[in-house]
Length: 411
Image 1 (tube, rainbow, N blue to C red):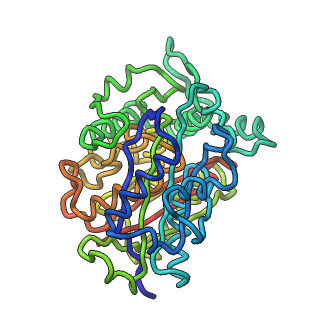
Image 2: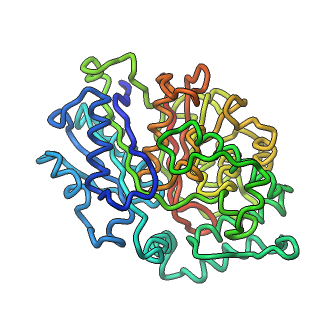
């Protein structure tokens, strides 16, 4: 089967952008991606538009993509709206990739845009409550929070503080389970956050660009123990986009900057016991992606993982096979996942520091990996980057993410 390629990619700065609308964010990301590809709107055969929050925050439901893109000049072509929790943008990418593989077009666009900042912070946080079964919310949360029993915060340390997404409590509980099972430490979580904040100092598009030591991360305000504020992804505004083409259309673009899609896999949660890490949906999706691409974890040059919290990065480091289960914390503490290390992870700054505009996050990961594989990442450029992997997940069903996407790219 002929290959599928990314020929254009872009993202806006992430952050608190109160004067910028979803339409404006979309326009900025799409215009930049088209420019990067050397492509006109008329060449795009179909569009996938990812967004999660605009309906709940602004009341714009059902036709978000058509509304956001029409003012740019997109007419007649299929525009498909995608909402798949934090994996929305990577799912949009997957559907664009699949459309090309089916031969239904030769050039398509995937875009994700979201605005989480609002004057009513409670409204923003309520968006996340829809990421679990609303008919069994209390039962689901109770089950998830029970995972963390047996590991208590140090004496005098508050367990929970301030307004926060319910997912911070969920991740904190699963982190405690990991600590009890494998001996993972809060300092190892801090090592992940410190690394990602350092990485963000080299990314001008990051929401935060301040370096933080491990001790500074540990001394920050507790959100939900063992997670302190710098270990948690913020809410964000932003957008990202990618132009994809079939091999037959590749001659219309700059082949020297094209990045091949070796694998694109989307999966949903499975029934498993907490101890059955090998059955985690991210693990299963990663194994399918490696098989699809004909590669192994050791072949990866760089990775972007869904670090909604520092613990999530540790968990997905293990799920993607970069170490044995239970060793993700040690890998981070040794510096293996730092820029210049054995397997650099979240060199963009990750969700913790780059930011997390939910509907755009997956395509922002892909933008970072495309930039790395092109050798255009500047001071954060990973040396000799040839193969790259992104893992993006969101929502919760049972004891794990409801939706997950794994993408493998290469030159």
